[in-house]
Length: 166
Image (cartoon, rainbow, N blue to C red; front, top):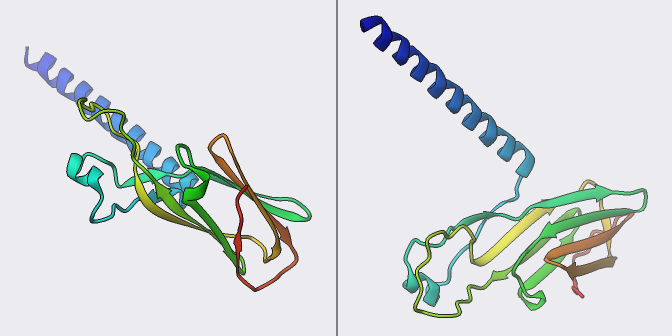
């Protein structure tokens, strides 16, 4: 019986170690692949959603994106699901793209209970370093199906400019 208990203890310890290693590997991959995608969402002091359920809303969320370089452009795509076009602001200064906005919480009824809340709401800002200097005067931005696409012509340009999203 003692040998069975020892063997069970070793098996449980080995499985816990394996689970911990898998969890650690997952976190390392998430952090290495997400870069700066982990974005903090800030609630306003007068935000009624905070009063609705204190601490129920996540303050951090992933704004997954990709940055592609072609011979003539730098193209940034950023997932912003659930956002309205008017709630998003895109600026470029030198070789830095800044995307800020606010993801608003909307509720159909006050007579419900959330059992899972993984979506973050509030104001955010994401700063994306660009691999090249770009010309902000030739920048274009569009928003479709929850994806913001910003196309920036390479060649320099140190001035900043607000980019209109269409």
